[in-house]
Length: 257
Image 1 (tube, rainbow, N blue to C red):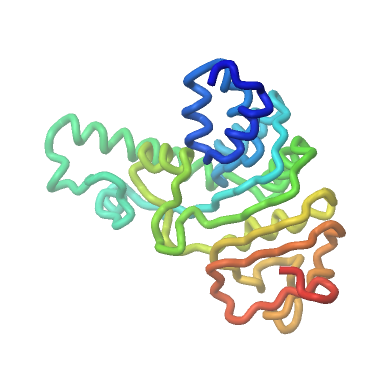
Image 2: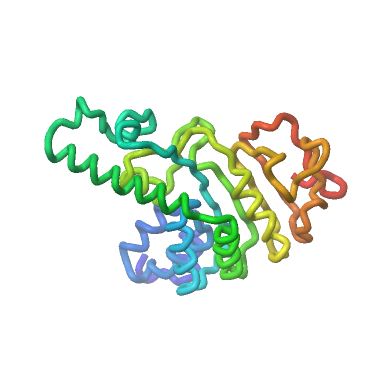
């Protein structure tokens, strides 16, 4: 396979998922460029200050040919040490009656310090700062056409398979809450989407409270004409796992979803 023409390699890697692409990229310098180029076509990022800032820096350095972006949103409870130890969202067993050895206690204390730092940093975020970071990301992806906004937990209430989410949970020993809305993140995107006419598809997965989203406020809140969202190239909106009853989105005629 080392001598395969690049065109054939490119076609081959286009059928692989992200994990397979990254693994194959490590096997040979011959595959490295093709695999990383293909992997960059669909970027995934966790909606945390650290992850968004890291992605902003990464794409400014590399200018990937990204066509799809998925943003995973999660919410973590704020706890003191005892609440954190006993919380049902604990990743590892931190119960005081189990973590008796000095090493286990030290590991738990270190994880709690990471958790408190994470909560403090996330609590310092502002709406203005979040919108500015999203603008920086979208403006650095000139070929972006599709955006997916998803809750970090699946429909089965299990955390989705995402490397950033997995690392964070292992570091702070706490999963994100199984329930939580994505309306704040959706609202931020709807504010800036009019600046990016190339965006054609918007997919939303998670609980969405329409009355909380300024750009979608209408009466009644269960009918949203897409012409209320000033995105001229937007042709497709998909909604999944919704908790708002019957929802209709209308883009001229016929409906655009």
